[in-house]
Every structure is written in structure tokens, then in C-alpha cells.
Image 1 (cartoon, rainbow, N blue to C red):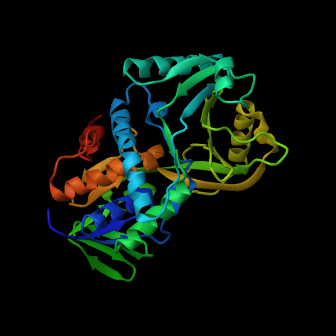
Image 2: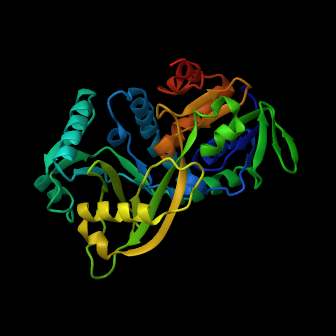
Image 3: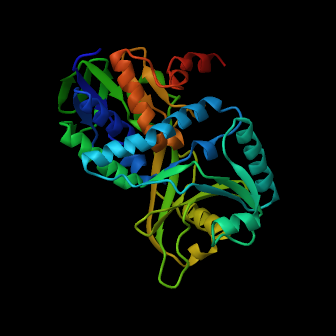
Length: 371
């Protein structure tokens, strides 16, 4: 499809809004369906744009797609600023800290793997890491310095995308979709016809597309927001990721003075209630890496549902019934927003896909089912 079309998008998190904005900017007539636009898992996210520090052997396709999207992020952010809202992109980089010997050994493996792939990631001692980021605990044994990672203020990003999409003429329907076809979206109020339909409903995608049932599932994650007080050390300058006795934790500073602390990850169905256990685990892990956090003001406790796939790749492409899928982004929804939007537009226009996007096509589901 090369001419202007009518496009229905189901889901208005970061992926749905990015697709809607880019599609409307390309001249398409776009309607987005979501009972709570610009909320959901995207509202709860930490905002790390970090394909390198998320990488692990065996997930080369995930890393390739993530790095392709990371390369697109500066232009994506600049285009949003040109629309009138700054999404809060930071290029301060990431440090990844290891608390004990086992954690340090794990990061050394990751560092070697990344260097073999030609990525910039240096393993350093705990003392060197503390010189790079004051406030880290003296117990930190070592870690990685990753200068190429970016971060974004997820809530400013969502506000920017919603404002940019609305300014481009995107219509938002605050109803939940109950049924999709390649040419229509049905809600409780009736059926809406389109030339094409894109599914960006995150963890709920399997409820709307039978082909994705069991392949996109919710993964609960709790997240905290804190604020330094006058008597405490300021937040770190960079994103700090850590592994504490095998459990991941991250601290992402905001230029507003807040510190985002996350994130737990466990199977809990569609339960999105934050628990005392999750809060305790996050605070204990963070305090062991960045002790000053114990005296910070706790300003928010919340939980969200990531849309996880079996292999950590999203599903980008046409499903058997003709609906276009753009879902299953797991921890990387914010990171993959630019490349996902470009991939959807490429599918609609019949032009070549971005590098790395072909591996994310939903036709791999049949291979997964044969295993």
C-alpha cells in the first residue's frame, strides 16, 4: 500500500503511539483504540535504551534489532522535539555493577561476549567503577562501563507521542477492542472499518489474536520512584544496572531529580498490584549497590505487565488473519519503538524492512510450536 489508507491501531502504549504518529505523519488516517492511552506498561517503565547491557549469548537477533533501533533513537527524539515536546533523551551511558564474585563472573562473561561482537563494553574493578560513578557501595566488586547506552524519560516520551499524534490528526477512541480482523476493530459500541489493522496491545495481545495466545504473555514488574533529600547524596549521573545475588536491579536518574528504581519480574498472570515483597526486594538490592537510596523519599510504588515472548523478540509482521502484529516487546518496548514504527510502515507500503526486523516476523511461531 503506497497511498493514504485508514489505519486502526489497537493499543496506545509507546508502541501504538509511535506507530500512530509515524503513520499519520506519512499521510495515513489513523484511529487508536485504548481505554487508557499513554499508560499501561509504558507508563511504569524505567526508560533504559540499552540493547548492549540487555544482551546475552544466544540472543543475537534481539541484540541486532535493539542496536538498529538505538541508532534510530536520536533522529526519532529530534523529530518529536520538532513536533513541540522534548521526550527527555539522555546520552550519559550505563554502568553495570556486580555485588559478589558470582555476579562479577557473570558480567565478565557478558563483557567478553560483547567485545567479541565488536561492542564497546569495558569490565573494570570496583574501585574504577566508583571513580566513574560516586556513591556506589564499597562492596561492589566490579562491573561494566557501557558508554553507548541511552535513556529516556518514559512519561515525557508518552506525553510527547500522544501530543504529536493528536496534532497529526490521530483520533483516539477510549474503548477496549474485543475483536479484530484485517479490516475492522469491534468494541462494545460497534464495529469500525479500516483498510488495515495493527495490534499493539502488549500483554493483552494474545487475548485478541488467537495466533499469539500462549506466545505473548504478561510478566509482572514492580517499579519505585524516589527523590533525593537535602541531606542525601544526589542520584547517580548515569543509569546504574546491577546484579545482586543473581537478581537484576536498575536505577535510572531523571533530570527532574527523581530516581526510578526497578524492576521485579515474575509470572503473575494479569495481576498488576504492587506487593510488599517486590518493594522490599527492590529497596534491598538498590541499597546494597547505592547506599544513599535508603534515605531517599519514596514517592511512588506501582506495577505493570510486560508483554513477553518466548525468545525475547517481538512479533512484527502480518498474522495469518491479516492483522499486523507489533507486540511482545518484553523489557524493550521503549527501546524498540522507532524500529517498530518503521517496520510497520514498511509492511504497509511494501518497502524493505529495517535491518533485523525480518527475524521478528510472527511466522516463527510455527517453528516454536514444532519444538
